Length: 103
Image (cartoon, rainbow, N blue to C red; front, top):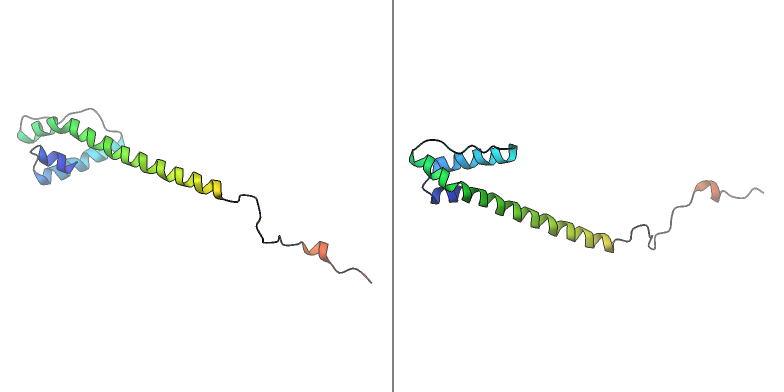
């Protein structure tokens, strides 16, 4: 997002601050307010908001795809897991049932 803001004319230091604020607003529930002011930074921010929204959408899409791959991998591993089947390991016997017979 910083690169998008800088490409639209926002100074680097201000672009980092704005990106941090936007990130906090989006993760915290954000609002629909647009930057105010007639200065160069305010105009650039208003022009950059659609690109910033697209940056977030693309980042979210990558996360979604990564989660889908992880869940698919876990599903395939679960299919190959033996589950309740025991392999060659014998079950331990209870000592009460293996007591020596009385003479």
